[in-house]
Image (cartoon, one colour):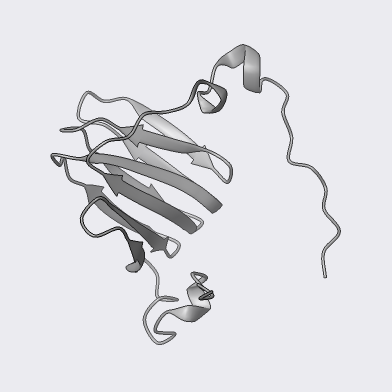
Length: 133
């Protein structure tokens, strides 16, 4: 077993806390089949997710991020939300508050029906309250 740490503290502390900083940290890969990374956006950070010839999954695990697509569509994502991009899709991601985003890239990927967001499914949903340390 190998422990993986992807919080901002695991990155270069001299740079990641600076306003507008973005850091990408590779976490694991599957010999060309998939790649898992953490994307850290400090407050004010922004990055373009370029269209690629593979699927890209972005999962916000902490903070908030805004996505802007070339067609003008803007979506606000917060912890517990994500986007699955088809091959050839991309967007601009920014965060005024900061965000930690897990990214998965793979030649084949499809969203499972239980995870797809629909208004009737997510309306009024809240995070459970967990006891903290």
